[in-house]
Length: 462
Image (cartoon, rainbow, N blue to C red; front, side, top):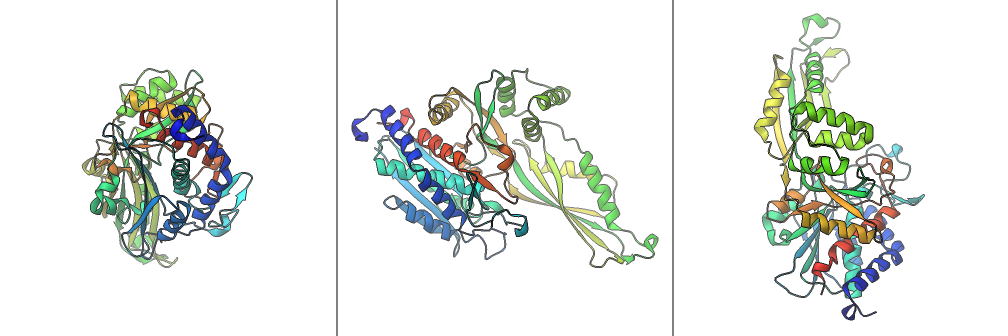
């Protein structure tokens, strides 16, 4: 079939069939990306994303590609497909990142974290889900469209950035400051959304993220008075104060915020009335917990600021009471909240405790873009095609983590979290930042099909 002589529907069918035929090729690309150890500790030298850029250059031979390094070895990969120039047709942006979180204790891994081993239909390795499957699927979608000569109008740009795991200053933050046009488009997709579920009518549904929470790190410095541990009453033990602070943090109950995502999500997905007070929201969450505990936890996180202790450091000898203790916390803020709101919550936690300083460092601001019926329908069409015609609904949600999408949103590009899994995926095996991270080949191929359908939406076809 010559794609230039075929109908848009026939071109899409051919492209989707090609995804299935290239299952081994796409899987091998993901394995090759995982085998690039792009661990990002946040301390230079780190990341080494340029080695993954080389893999993408080789795979996308024939496609216009370049690597822009923010520093030696810190590569940001860019690939472009140019369709028929038409001012009325959209430019599309595909985002992902190449760095990965540290692997942790290697003895916890079933397979070495940079082996890309295949076991029971899954590709194992650090970054398999976060975010090299997304990168592999995007690259495969571009290669298939290029190889088929599929007709489309506008421009498709794929950008795989460095340094997402530590805030993006060497990746999309650097691109936004130095090459902003790379990130400007009419519409874009990235990680941070695409969870499958069923709505209250039993219809297959997916949660897409038009927004995400912000992230801060809080370093609490708790000062006391050191002493020999054999005479503890002569000391002012900062660990005791830190324990009281941790207990208070655990009991915090920040005022919930019903953002527009939740207002649209709750009635349509669950068929329940929209809560308008904090008490009603709590009743709703209890109801959701009986229906879907995992989704209930997600809605709870999406509707309030969170403050979680994650690290504590004190002392250098077991027989000495330390004079100082450091407690590090992770905080997430909702769209519309700022650092002043967070500091008010921190002050509430400290209360009358003495000897505590709180140092706040911002990693990412909350961000978001509009959710419209037209956007929902575009995702629904793509997902339906990926599922061979199954009726699908798309609902907005709020990503409780942070992604690089905020950098493109700040430049005016509407970005949506869209990394859909196959509806039969085993969510228990899809964890990130943990040992035995893996991606099922079924999910990888489904994601590629969904991206192909999204890119070849009929509104962008010749």
